[in-house]
Amino acid sequence: MAEASIRLSGQDEARALFGPQDDFLRRVRNATDAGIVLRGNEIRVFGTQAQVTDCCRILHDWQSVLSTNGELLQSDVEKSLDPDVNEVTAKQRESDTSSSRSERPSSPGFRETTSARGFDHRSADSITPKTSGQKRYMKAMEDHSLVFCEGPAGSGKTYLAVAMALRALEAEDVRKVVLVRPAVEAGEKLGFLPGDMQAKVNPFLRPLLDAINDMMDFDRIRRYMSNDVIEVVPLAFMRGRTLNDTFMILDEGQNTTITQMKMFLTRMGINSRIVVTGDSTQNDLPNGTRSGLRDGMERLSEIDGVAIVRLAGKDIVRHRLVREIVSAYDDSSHSSRS
Image 1 (cartoon, rainbow, N blue to C red):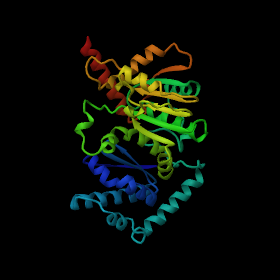
Image 2: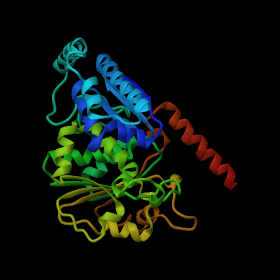
Image 3: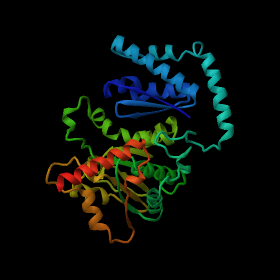
Image 4: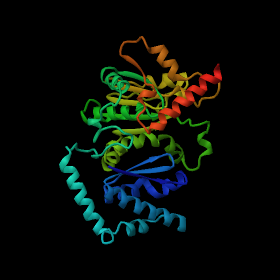
């Protein structure tokens, strides 16, 4: 499995490269069979070496056009994806893909790949925990209707929850998946971001979309989202709803107030499940505001059907430095309080 990254200047460049309604992104994925996810201001590309090389070449071409002309047009995209130009590469891709697929079992609707986050999987259904903490977390999601999971960055809180939600959807245990995030980030407010409401909230929801993109092919995601089988929405849009037969995930729960947490949890309808994830060390609420995550974990811990899972530094499965970074900040925080 090969992997490469492409640095972007910001979200505006990402939107331009991905095209209207992510159409350009879909086309380059279909043309190269490479996996593509956005991590902040960086595009991560993974697949066979031929797939990654071909995809990066196209994306770099698009960046060059965008830098020179100030925009990326449909004609530019079509020219870069010209089958005559890419005939040799396409044949190599087909050979690599055929040999790769012959060695691995297929799971309909999901890309056959190893996640960029380090989990051993080829589909949501085959994702396995890599640590004892993650094992407890997945078991809790299987056995309880409401799960709170608190842990550091990189410990798999959101990723495993999305995997379980898609698994439940594929098994028809639920009819709908709703992924929710509070629109609070590092002290910034939506009004300071450019664009309409969709453009404003997209950066906040992108991590959830990335997780889905790692586990399901783009066409199926688009079909599910257009039919409201999968929703990715800001927390404020949940008010007044009651959701039956739904797997709901609230990500970044530490950035909810007590009132917001109560509002979200009471959206649960018949045969619905909720997972709330968060990291209390990355709280972006105003000073003096009590987090709905910690409050909910303390207030609801004794209720039957509710599970509380706490992940730790040893559960981090990102780059090895992430574990050391988290540990260093924890040590610094303890020293400053002493």
